[in-house]
Amino acid sequence: MAKTIVGSAGAQGGARPIPRVRLAAWLIACCYLAAALVLTWRLWADPASRTQIIAANGISHDVDLFAWFLRYDATAVAHGHLPALVTTALNAPRGINLMWNTSLLLPGVVLAPVTLLAGPQVTLAILLTLAFAGSAASLFVVLRRWGASISAAALGGALYGFFPALWMEAGGHYHLIFVVLPPLIVDALLRIVTGRRHAVRGGIWLGLLVAAQVFISEEMLAQTVVAAVIIVAVLAASQPQIVPKRIKGTVTGVGSAAVVGLLACGYPLWVQFHGPLTEHGSRGRSPTSRTISAISSPRPAACSSTPGPLRAPLASQPVAVGEYVAYLGWPLLAVLLIATVCFWRDRRVRVAAVTLALLEIFSLGGQTIKAGGLQYPGVLLPWHYLQNLPVLNQMRANRFPILADGTAAAVLAFSLDLTRTAVRNDWRRWAAAALAILAVLPLVPLPFQAGRLEPVRPAGPRLSPGCGSHQPTACSSSPVARR
Image (tube, rainbow, N blue to C red):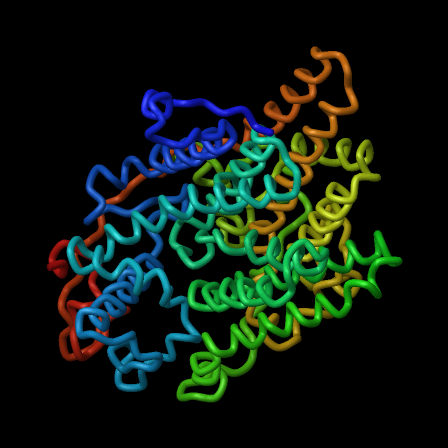
C-alpha cells in the first residue's frame, strides 16, 4: 500500500491523507503542462494574433481554416444551437459538409466561450497547449493502469506527447495533434478483452470515447482502430487458450460500444456518408508515404524550429515535411530493439513491440519505395492491400507514426521497469535508465517560432480564399475580425 503524507490540516483531522502516488501523478501532469507552455511560450506572448511556424513550412494556411471552423462553432453556440453539419457559409454557393472536413466540432463547441470572448486564435493556442500536455498525461494514465511505475510511465507519456510525430503535425493539423483519446480507447478495449472490466459498463465507456473522437478526428480514430486490431490480434496469438473464454465478454462489450456510439453520432455519420456534399473516391497517394531513411535518420531535424541550415534540406523534400521527418531516430530504435529482445517473454513488451513494427511498416505506404539505391515493390508492403478499403482510403499512411510513438513509449516504459527487476546492481539500473534518457534526448523539441498573422481583407465581388459569402469576417483569424 502506498505511503501517505498528511498536511497540517490532515494532522488536525480536518482532511483525508493524500496518497504519495496520487500527488506524484498530479506533479507529473503539472510538469507536462509546464513543458507544453515552454513549447508554446512565443504564442502566449500575443496569442490573439500570432501562430506557430514549423521549420521551412512557415505559417500554414490550415490555421486560417481551423480558425474559421472555431468561429463558426462559437457563433452557433451563441445562438443557442449546435453547429449545422452542412453550411454554405464557406465555399458558397455550394457549401461544405463539416463531417467531411477537419471541423473540430467537439473542441469547437466546448471552447466556444473562449472563442467568443478572445477570438479563435486564442482558442487554437489553448488547444495546442492542451494537446501536448493532455496527450502525454493520457498515455501516462494508461501505462500506470497496465503496471508501469510512475517514473517509467512519466517518460513514456512524454515520449508520446511531445516528440517528433506529434510535434511536426502542430504546424496546423490541430485535428491530429489532439490525441488524448486514442490511448484511452485502446485501454478501454483491452480491459474488455482481458476481462478487467464489466463488459457492458466497459462497452458504454468505449462507445462514448469513440463518439467523442469522431467529432475530433475521424482519421485518427481510423488509425486507432487499426492499432487496436493489431494489439488484440497479437494478444490473442500470445494466449490462444484463453480466447474462447473471452469471446462472449468481448462481443458484449464491443456490441455495447457500437450501440452507444451509434446513438451518439449515428445521425452525423449518416449526414457524412448519405447527406449533401458527400465525398466519393480517395485522396491521392503520391505524397503519403515515407522512406526508410526517414524512420531511422540519426538527426531528428523535425525537432528544430530554428531557421538556418535545416531550412534548405527540408524545403527540398518531395513530400510534406511534417510527415516526412516524423521519426524516432536510430538511437532510440536501437534501444527499443534491445529491450524487445531482452524482454520478449513479457506480454506487454511483445504486444507493444509488434504493434510498433507494423505501424512503422504501414507508415511506408503502399507504393514502391527507394532505399539505398534499391527499389522495394509496393506489393510487398501490407498497406498496399489496405489502402483501398472504405474509410482507410481517406487516410495518409505517413501519419501512423503518431500512434507508433505511443507503442514505442510503452515498450520503453515496461522495459525500464523490467530492467530494474532483473538487474540487482544499482549502477546497472542507473546505466539502463541513463541509456534510455540519452536515446530520447536528441528528440527533445525546441519551442515553436511564432509569426504574426496577416489581416484578412473582407471579401469583394469574388470570394477570398477560405471565406464565405454570408459573413466574410467570421472566417478571419486576424485582429481585424475578432470581437
